[in-house]
Length: 111
Length: 114
Image (cartoon, rainbow over all chains, first blue to last red; front, top):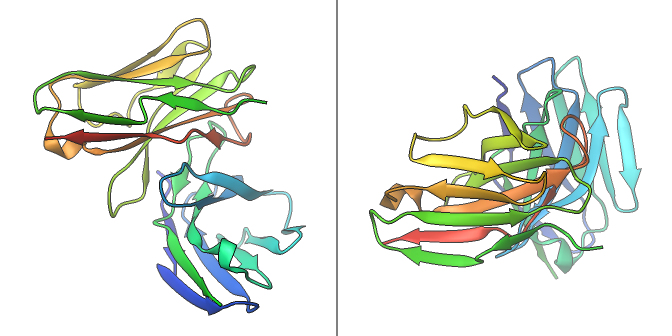
């Protein structure tokens, strides 16, 4: 089955700096890679996703890149703000939609 | 429009009791997923439904766990004879169909087994 590894487990950044979270996956059949943001006491919120036919996708301050050959994908947050503080999860899925999640990254943005 | 809703938001139960957790998906979404998030661990897939059928139950931790979905909408996850290790947040997500469609999560049900 699919195995997703996520690094780092914690990330502390100064407000205004960039944050990068990296994930690797094992199943070459995986073709959809969403990223979720989870704030304390809430369910995960989909923030961006990428499909295997695309190498990069951007939405305002967040971007995701995918390298299918190396089986890794990354989340980039630019100009970080305190409200970006949360736990971020990467995930991968095959055609059935069963998401396999990474272990999560606790991002702390300090003013 | 309304998102995924789950009830109850919190449930405290005694070891050995049965519990039922409810998920109300986004209207029109045919696929529904259950995940479990334990403290200090990630999100773990439990079961999914396409319509009312559950093609893959392999993620259910034991035979004390079961789920059903009727009318292609609301789903209930039942845990029988609860154990302390069942304590976790149970999350439900729905998507337009199964496959590579966006999954939207509900707020979860926090289950505590004492």
